[in-house]
Length: 604
Ligand code: BES
Ligand code: ZN
Image 1 (cartoon, rainbow, N blue to C red):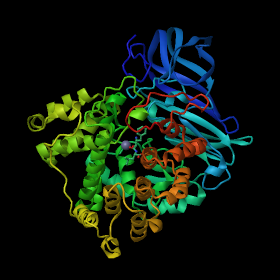
Image 2 (tube, rainbow, N blue to C red):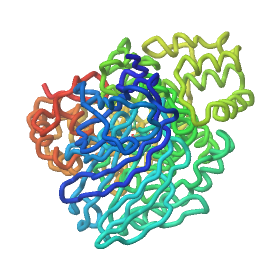
Image 3 (cartoon, rainbow, N blue to C red):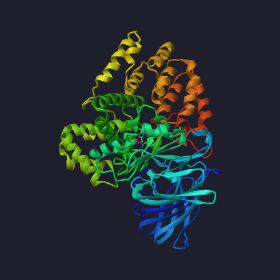
Image 4 (cartoon, helix red, strand yellow):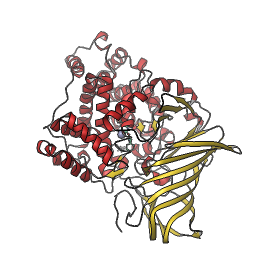
């Protein structure tokens, strides 16, 4: 059998899925989707077809009016089950009828109390990296693309959304049926569905936001500049080929900042700050419309092609929209984060390579920010080697030539060498891509705004606390840089003092508090615990949560609390978060997964 992707059972020599028509009924009592799906293949298939599945309860498989033989004939903790469809004789379409399981890793079913409105339930999916298989059997590898259409039936009080174009809505008894189509071919990890008490607010001709009524005003103000972002992104990356760009504001348990589902970015509510301070997150998810969604990593080993390119594009667009001083400041901050993570997991860990040999690794627990920032810094070096003008022409060619295709690292490097051979003369591409760590032979970012923060910190290290006036005008990334670089252990009095002069409470920014609570914990400021618990209870974004847990596990006084808190909040966290934050053996259907040194935690 020919496996093309270490994270999928698919054997692409058998055939490929081209299109799926789904009829989906959301059962909010049973917490499952009841689905009937018609699959069309690129060409007729003879013999077997292997699909990825995870917890799928398959009732029926039919092709040309004839029942198909099938079996779940392989099983793996990481990959799920292999659905083996048998005896396909020149078949180019088939139908499967099935239910998802209550433990489907991609699906989060929330009771009303966990939403902003407090009344209606909420459902959302998160398929990246390998969770689409828990929603429908598929070739769950980013190197297979398919179009789809879907009908989603939900109770009348709810609105269903998908990362697709909405075609129409009609009533059926006590329910509503929403119809969608996705005419552009997508990889399975970009399949996305949501349902809740949602309203829509238009922001611009191509942009809008779906949110619960309680949040929609604030969201519409926060993201009012999205249209201008698309215009800027198009200059750098080429025409936007997905039609609309809307946002879906999720309940706080969402484990990510954002997820670039095509046409409909899924977003954490913690991005609504009231000051447009986190719109670089939108820039990032929007840039994925090209780097990731249009040109896609072929496997999760090539993840840096998605995230490194997107982070690079994000910095370029941000430079235009926010100015070079801001872009330089964030580059310094990002570089520090990169060092921090590399030091934590070890400079020679395989996770510090851009191309990560990840067979047998869970892509979720192997995810770090390394492919983001090391990838971005590598692409910047490529830009410096040939100059911005030529690099920009290269970007256009790249997104044009490979649109709606998937690419391995090697195919990308071949293209780079053909188009910009000087890059290979000036930059040690081999080292950047295949070696661990971060080379010293690169142009280092510099920033006056960052230096200002560092000089305040160096005075503080010598014993003098900054005055309020020195920090009063600081920008968000200056505050983040300050909190990032504070000594690990400071007097509790100083924690209180910094919270006050930086006005953390007034700004109510979960990004600040993630650092702040981490410092409080390592500093032994025990009175902070109830507030930390409240934060963990409220915020699901892993980027913010995991550092706090790491600090708790490392501090003797806090360690017993870490376990207790994790147990207490587990039911409220996303499955992905709870899998990463413990070995999770008590959750039904959720087995311990091999935990690597990346994002994940293990409580000793
Ligand atoms: N595509 C990622 C989120 C993701 C990564 C989901 C890996 C599943 C597996 C998204 O674009 C992203 O990178 N989100 C970041 C924010 C970004 C600005 C660094 C996040 O969620 O923190
Ligand atoms: Zn991303």
